[in-house]
Image (tube, rainbow, N blue to C red):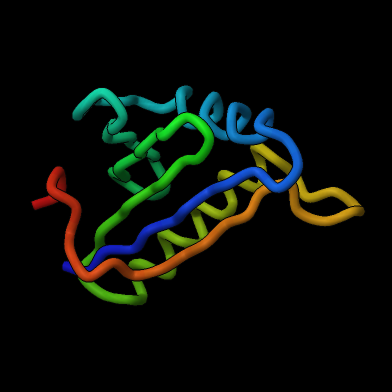
Length: 107
């Protein structure tokens, strides 16, 4: 299994993190800890959502990079639907990377 991580921060207002948080609240959630939940997104599967208050982090796992590319596109689409881009640019900063370790809830 390979993991992918998305860090989401607001560029201009903390409101946009709340909008994304509320968007993910519409999916089935299973609490894992005080700050972490497993969220089931029908087009993606299970993701780990970590909520630090001012930022969100999403983790997903897949068997290969092509599956992770699909997951990345689907999550990006969900976020773009929740917070559309404006003519002035992005309201959110999205930073994707591949962590060295699989998050504990997915082991």
